Picture 1: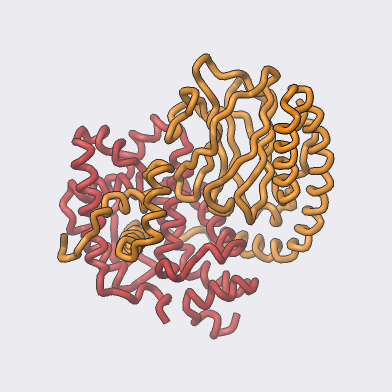
Picture 2: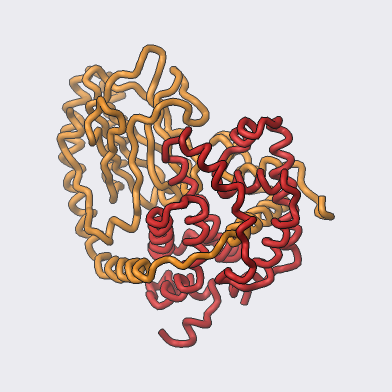
Length: 261
Length: 194
């Protein structure tokens, strides 16, 4: 149309650019894009149009205080970067203790020994690489304000989600973890059920690096396989603000009690 | 800040941000904060939330300048897409049902309010996209505004407007193609092509 030769994938490219595709289809489109120069060019064309469309709104100046705040925060962040090394050390030390506590907890669950060892090694590796953590907030009235923590390696794709005090979902339902992309898309990170004491320990494998995500949510979905996109009530979640790490010195210290109930 | 910084291209400024040059961030802020804030405000209708989106976005650029890949197009549209996505995410997190009717109401007049003289970014691409948007027939303009500024999925748009999903998909695709076609040939957006 309009004299432009479009590709057969154009509809999917439009939906991909608008962040509307379910994770599986988005992944398939991304794989196709890797090998198709024509579609890559078309996506760039669509994305650029979407970018320019953002200028077609009434223009309003933000307050001067915002400028001062942004620049001051950036300056402060520059001075605080040295704290990262210190924080890594703190997290690593806490990780050792947490793994020990988790070992006790998981042992009590009477798992197979080899399964346990593999799981423990996996968890230890994720924790050792973790350099950031934040609290998972309970979002339903019958839940505590904080239901656990997520530990992740900001430069990698794995993380550990430690949850406690979760009520069991209704019969036939499961909890599903969603990673929230900057563009609003949701990637499923798997389904789970807490144990009888409401605890869960999940190793999360993100499809893309953590920096492409801005938060995590847990919804109630039909079991046993969950849904392609969130459909049920959201019961817990967190957003993360990478900048806050250094800007407000809110270095999240691991809570050892979260690991073993 | 030296004049060399204030006159640098966007790509050069992002490179400077990578080497922790705060003056470069300052120039990028001065170039784009108004556009980013205005877009977030048009989506959220909440100055506080729009400022928060603006602040988070610029600090994100400061913290992770490597996330901008010059091979995927110029900086300005990339930044505005990020602003739109962040604002839509905030919007979607608000109470969904209450928000839907409100979003419908608030987003149907975005382009009607355009004043060609009030944009911070005066260039041909801005003029072309506004012109193209204004020239879309009302059916096409409505769906693209609902999808882009309202953050509605095509399925939600179909349900709300009572038209088949296939029709909505065709309209969104056609509208985007018209906008893209209007921009074609203009390969000099903002300052990022030097």
